[in-house]
Image (cartoon, rainbow, N blue to C red; front, top):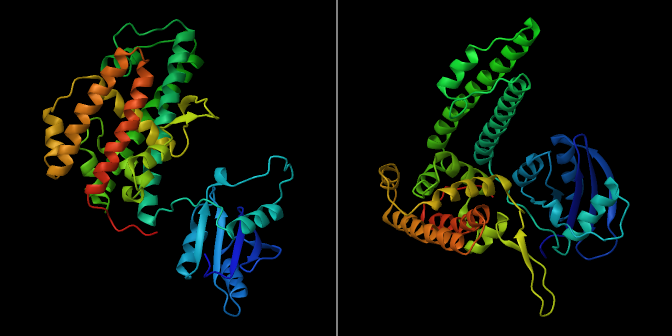
Length: 371
């Protein structure tokens, strides 16, 4: 960072940005005040700060305002970091928080390089990630709507006697449902219509997701990950959309730690204590990996469906996928034999599955993703 002469800390909000500047040569951090959170105001700020031979480096916290400011500053030719809020060093006794103090703190910590930057996706990757998260939101709403409908039926003692809900037989049973009061029949029909509407929206997003994944520049990586057992197109797309370039992780343990799948630890001296997984980092990928890990409860086997997916990949990827099956299926049986709970065994398998995903990411062709 020695080439920069000014380090700019920005506390970004919806309408305003608090700005502070720290000079590379040291000295007190200067608070410049607030500017509007608009492209024109940011461009004007850059022009004011670059007077002379100033080389600028900006930083702001990751948050709901997204990466628009980062992209604008990078396009203008300046360095900009989006920092992880949870990794910003803070004094334990500091109980005063204002926009001014936050911007000063960011500039002061940015000067010696004590802030941890997050990885910023490019436009196409962020669009794919928005699509996967939108589908997840709709599926959550659909799940809630189904629970509300079943809870309404349960209050009136109407329980389906079949094997499973939401099958064709279950829907036929729902069509025959009648209530004593007309208002109750209206409420019931509203619940049914909500479930059907959300189901159609989820199906439409599934089709859109499949189309977007196959047409994106990330498809070679997605297709390679689909050679793994338990990793279908949706899971592979979520992994790529959330993580990005797998080659940015130097080792597999780095990816495991990034996903929060490593055990927490509290050790001091000769005492070593390890607890549950840290659950830090990206929860979307962690969830789909744990779901995929459940498929390794069964013995290793190359099914026809898995073979058809794997044959479209390279020999190196197929070998990694088969080694993953042998390793992870045996790992699950070993943990189960030791008396581990099934959820604990699957979490451990998910951690090692992340390692095989990293290995495929090193051999699969990666798209050119902007920094």
